[in-house]
Image (spheres, one colour):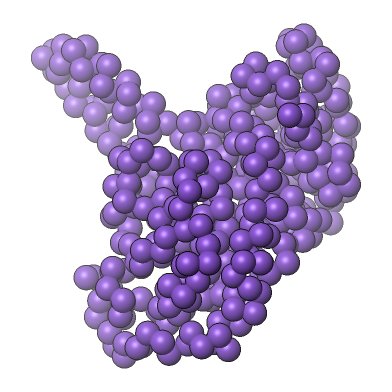
Length: 369
């Protein structure tokens, strides 16, 4: 099957053209049917592309005179979108010149540009940033939102759950992903009113969707493999993500320091090296690179700014999979099955108050539970 080509912001990320073009080459080597639109400084892109002659027939270059910096504000980026590599890559999706866009650039700018250019799917209020997290289970964990929306109500959380489940069915091949809401406890009475309302609504629509809602989950259980989709607001999600990444680096650094502490430890490292290599591979963020803005009328994938060429290739592979499996259409179909009235107006659907709200003091007293 011939897929639409993928627009690549060739200038984004910490190393820009070098890593992005090498990542394109690696992805193309794994799937020679892929076609690309590389957007950026034409001279720099062509110079780097010359190192990979096998890509010549698979790539078109589109010149972009400007680049959005990593510290540029989204409002500034929006004003310059038409002349930047990021803005032109997203615009290619809007115009139908590409089926998806991949960028390793400024996350806030990419979200703002993508939302303005592509708009959200009917029935979705806000797009959410979703990514894959390593677990002890058989599949990676889909987690969202990871920072696109700091404040979310019950309606947003339910929409995130529907989108996350559709994503998990594609990337992990699951027929009915297990979905949970991130909370300070697993009991039904814990958490904010919006969390409890979202849980009540998800219980009601459980049978209408290809997902299994299993209530709340605490942050320390996310990596156990007992959940396929973890749903939260962008503020909590971003904190949880950074904490998990920090814990992974802590373990890696602690092992490195321990193995270097003595001659006996160094000998132990040589014996255990196959196991430590497996651990390093499992925790390597490049093996999980590629976060997607779910809920847009088009596929936009965010590669980590510091990703290696392997990480960029992984993000491109995910992008191709989402195009092949028609992610946007699947989300729209799931929303239609549930009904826009229920998702967009949970209070009028009879949800508010179905779960007894705990007193305001309960939340404060349970923060450390």
